[in-house]
Image 1 (cartoon, rainbow, N blue to C red):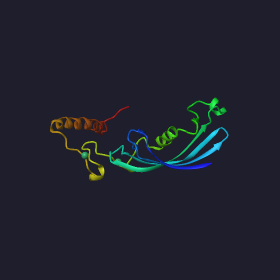
Image 2: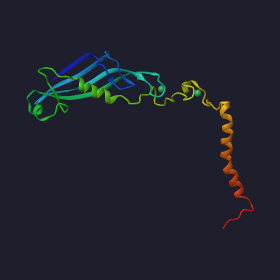
Image 3: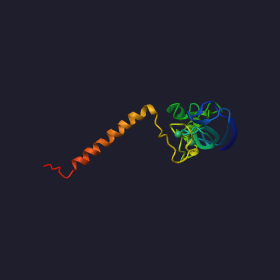
Image 4: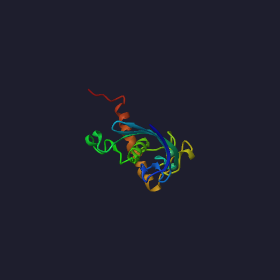
Length: 177
Ligand SMILES: [Zn+2]
Ligand SMILES: [Zn+2]
């Protein structure tokens, strides 16, 4: 068994739409390489800085991600090599193995599809785009465009109409059945 600790630059496009590892950022690899009968089992953790933006308010997010990875790399011409598909098990290429697919899977699976700057981020006001943190609790946009005011009054009238009818129906002189 061998322990390998290495710092490597992050490949391009390591992440999702809103959050990911910046290209060229330091990936800290902390790996154990174990010789097994059919090849080399690589396991350990990868630690990387991630940056992105909050899915609700677009504030920048910057944190450190640490994910476990494990992958078997089969020897060329071993039974495993001959009986498995390329995407099931890795392959040693001479003395080398390509960690990138396993690393990519581990990192991408650990990233949130909808990242948040904090769990209870209230987001932005859809009307004015200001962060709700910076607005009073009773913030609203009730002022109606004067051109719509007349229509709004009409709506109020329609809304109240059934109530009037209901009150009339419940009148003292109303008898049914
Ligand atoms: Zn946010
Ligand atoms: Zn607003």
